[in-house]
Image (cartoon, rainbow, N blue to C red; front, side, top):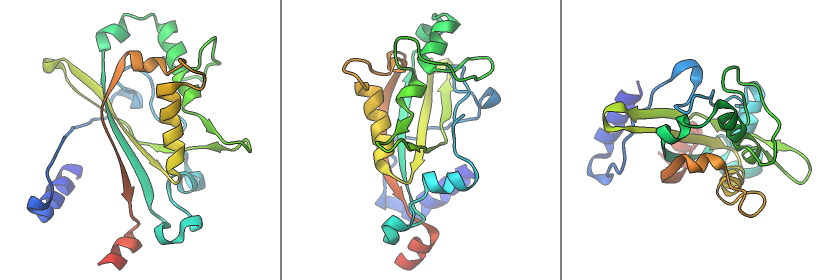
Length: 198
């Protein structure tokens, strides 16, 4: 369905757009990424999903829309696989086999750096829909991060924590094995907003 949707959109837009990058993702074993860990464990569900991913009445003209952030990461899988499982787990912040959350030991994990809590102690979630992609024949392996949020600052803070660290120099160690290649931010309007624009 996504393939057909892409084709229809590109046909309708014609020469008005140029495709800069095209990545075909896939679902991997047990919702895991190519690093071997379950991805999207903390995704909100039910009413929390709407509260986390969709703009609410605080921004009435854009209500029901969402901010989307996409980033393409390439993995150095040989380097990652050379690590002991315990080291991989400390970097991610979860156990590899059964996806149990771990406490940080000495340095902030990816899980900790991407958990955003505001000054009032409220945790802010996003909806992640990451897709692994790759081509074993070309030795290319990666993750296409896709995050939807009600408040763009939440993802911006996650990225700042990953790349800069909460404390200076304590960046996300996953970046030693995953290199960001592209990134973009979008606004996805609600159906009613699109209808009104027409």
